Image 1 (spheres, rainbow, N blue to C red):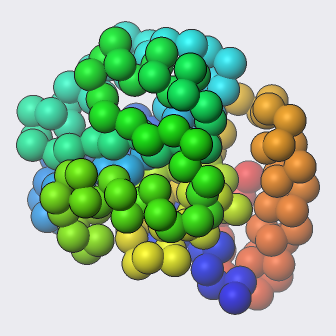
Image 2 (cartoon, protein in one colour; image 1 turned 30 degrees about the horizontal axis):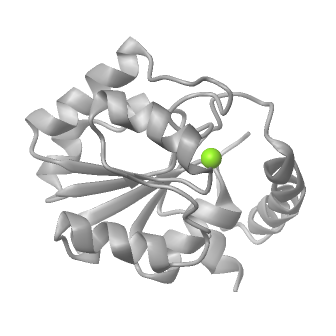
Length: 171
Ligand SMILES: [Mg+2]
């Protein structure tokens, strides 16, 4: 059970995930979380650096879909101006939104990675349908209300994973 929370990879930030490296591994698509993965949860728009990151994926023929548990207003306002397809109210770790994203991108699970900052939603949900999961360090230490609650559970899961020697990285 604990293994379901274990990401396949762990990086410091979204910018450590490079289009060329993904392409070399045969990755054709990305399902990414929004809040505290791409930008701070309370930042409404993409930064210029992030827009370049999205462009690098377009250039490498890697399709990106934003899959967020946040509401339509938040996700649409962020994703529409940069032309990135999105799914809001995703209810991760339920798998339905991940499956819908795969369908829309017309890609198989083995060709897609999931990126997110939360074990309880992004990583658990991605692992449940066999997607390659990449955990990023949250962009900011503050969180919205529900996430604050999730973080408490997450800390205890991380502690157990460390005790069992299943993860090596330091926070
Ligand atoms: Mg998040």
